[in-house]
Each structure stands twice: as C-alpha cells, then as structure tokens.
Image (cartoon, rainbow, N blue to C red; front, side, top):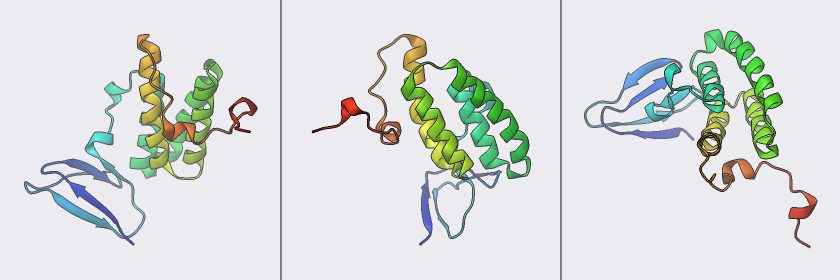
Length: 152
C-alpha cells in the first residue's frame, strides 16, 4: 500500500534531497517505494539549530536528506550525541536520546526526527525556565516501566 501525502498549495518538500514545491492547487503524492521525504515544516535550516536537541535533529535530518554524505554526518552526529548524553542528568531525556539513536541505527531517521521534535518541546521549557509540559507520550511509551510505576 503506498504512502499518501497531501500537500498544501505552494508547500515545499524534499524527496531524496531534491527540494520541490507543490503547485498552486496543492498536490497529492503516492509513494510506492522507500524514499526520504520531508515536508517543509520538518526541514530545519542550520541557523535554526540553536540548542542541543535542535542540533541533534539537524544532524539526523542531514543524514536523511543527503544519503551520499550520510557517513560524514553520522560521525559528527555520534560525537555530538555521545557528548550530549554525557552532559545530561535527567533520566527521561537520556532515555529519549537513546531511543532516538536506536531509530537512527535502524535506518528509521524519520521516526528519530519525530521523537526529536517532541524532545525539543521539553528542552525549550527546561532552557527557558518555564514549566515543562508533561513528558510527551511519543517518548514516554518507549521507557521501561519502573517498579514504582507498576500497578498491582
């Protein structure tokens, strides 16, 4: 069954690194095989990668969109991820980073980007000193249940 994507009029998107724009009426795409696709809203410019998790997102996005240079980006990503995990003290954030890496290692970069977006919301709250939202369910569902969380 193909993946069906509906694009808004003049919405930008990238397929296998090529940037395209939908026409004035929008478009519906049917993808019948595996391809790297990102909508414009999911594409981050380098100058937008202004925080640790946003930089991680940026590296993953580059690996997804530029498969010819994936190995080069992967080396930078791994160094950055290792440093980030060492610097983080919050268990949920560390576990989230590990889950994100598991998706990257399995070649599921889009899933990794989805989880990064959820983690960016938590990071933003922590960095700005605002009340963090409840830890996103997209991330929480990947955590093992601890003894104190189990229901009798």
